[in-house]
Image 1: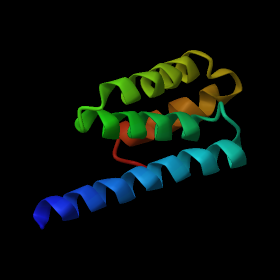
Image 2: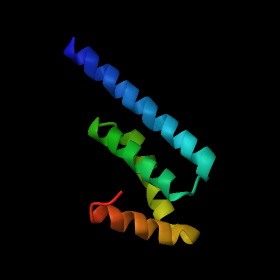
Image 3: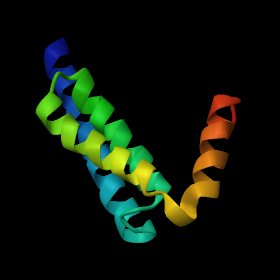
Image 4: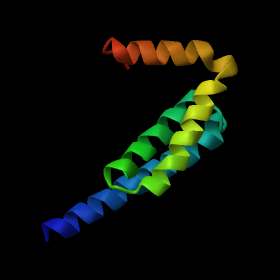
Length: 88
C-alpha cells in the first residue's frame, strides 16, 4: 500500500514537471531562463529515481541554455544571485 502511494505521488510529480515545461516553453519561449530551471528540476527528478538516460538530455539542454543565455543574462544573474542569498 505504501509503495502504491509512492508510485502515485511520483507519477503526479512527473506529470506536473512535464506540464510545467510545456506551459513555460509555450508562454515564455524555449530559451527562457525559467524553462531552463524547470528542465534542470525535471532532470534532477529523473536522476533521483535512477532514470539517468531520461535525465541526461535534459541536463544537456539546460547546459546549452546556460551557455547561450544571450539577452537573458541579467535575468539569469539576478535569479541565481537571489537564490544564493535566500531570495526567490
